[in-house]
Length: 258
Ligand code: CO8
Image (tube, rainbow, N blue to C red):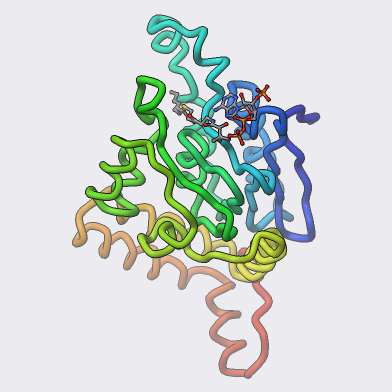
């Protein structure tokens, strides 16, 4: 499939999707989100791909939903099309790990998109924010919920109410990102991290994703039970047998996703 708003590539076992609307700082419009959902669907089906990196440009991961496109919408348009819903749900359906590599602005829908990924590695130039308040609206694809879970109520509330940006240091300190790397090394680092994940059992990486995500959806007791059942079920896989044998034989495991 040809993409107009993305650059899509596969490097060994890592799928790389780069948002590519440079004239609008990668603002998310319907076309981009549809293409992103489609690209992730293709990567989900491609057995070669074991981990995915989602990136923007050096200046902007994404500066929000496309204000020009949204400015023409009425309530009826938004409500009847259920604007962005099918696309964001398709993004969340991807079972392979997705790393957001964030450089520059990740604002509004851009911050929300980064938070939909499984974790965020950012450059020292990254700036996160939910500035929708300045447009007379609020976050609409999960920001008020996810940012609050990641950084806590006080900081999330302040960011949504004032629209201020958070720099990379603050984002790391408050748990929004896993790591900060120098801007020039961002892609190299994200790719190396993805390659490391791609060496693991895909069955185990999918199970990790399900288990950690479940911690946001349920009680501690139910989440621990869910984790235990997933743990037990991995003993039905060849990868478990290979992983443990390789440890005892002092060699590297060769996982086959079986
Ligand atoms: N939408 C459309 N175009 C944009 C956007 C955007 N979000 N952000 C930047 N652009 C465009 C600018 O209009 C400009 O275009 P042009 O050159 O044609 O004038 C180009 O990108 C470059 O931008 P700037 O000249 O403004 O660049 P600066 O370096 O001066 O400033 C900023 C960078 C600070 C990032 C600035 O562009 C900015 O404030 N952008 C808007 C940020 C924002 O408000 N984001 C939130 C948008 S609302 C949202 O995301 C809602 C999400 C929920 C959707 C839910 C649907 C159900």
